[in-house]
Image 1: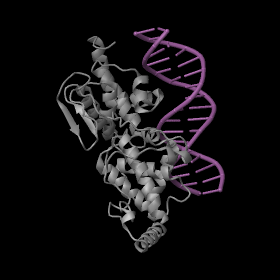
Image 2: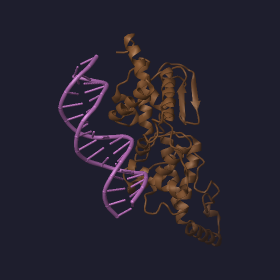
Image 3: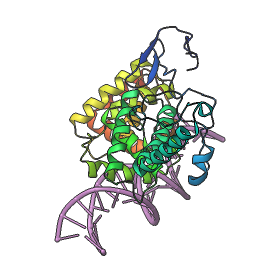
Length: 309
DNA sequence: AAGACGAAAGTGGTTGA
DNA sequence: TCAACAACTTTCGTCTT
């Protein structure tokens, strides 16, 4: 893997903290998420179309242990030096190889292909290994149950990854998954729901607070304001403002308010872009937060003190 | 001129008959 | 299977800074 960033590019601090669970490197001084999707393995990640993709894709993820046969498979004739074999053994060798080809079932071939795609997407999103393993497991189960039939392999891979992210509380938005995999958002959502239902995988509704660190760092919001936004989220959950709403919208609104309260104002548009929702949604959540949590008083106070505009 | 606000109409998904 | 429904988006006009 390429050399790691030793200093925070933002504040120059060396107090970097690697949160392996969430696949993020965080600067403890300024709160910036330093290494989030900042890898470049110098390979061609783009998919050109469903057909050409398999041929043009140059490589899977650099290294990983998630292999289709758990690394236990045998490939006949990988490195054998054929010239050293007599005619008889050579025949035997070819027969064996042909045989092996026949018994490698559709499932195995599918898995081999799918897992390399999975690794590619996972590494693009910098997902931790645990999530990658989990999604590989989910995908394998899906194939064994014949759930891939009628769906594109790539979309099931994306769905499995999304499910694994949710289970491990390392949320990535559908938009991010979509960008990384080249599959449409709704398609991912659909296969995700289908696969989890068919496999009986229960997923907790994702927690808005899980999105805060990434959104905040993208917006360069101070750690203090971040904690504030998490407080706000907790209160909001008590008031039952969160159920039924999109978690990203709520996280975005909480972040918007706390930035405001800390004199680090960001425009609704900026926050909306990072969170992948519209300004309107932020406004609606924001309004609810003000009403229910009596935050408007705090804002008025700050206005008097001229801390904020 | 840019940002915030809100109304109105449209979209995609869920739910319940 | 269809219609009602809630959440969210898009679009657009108005107000504020």
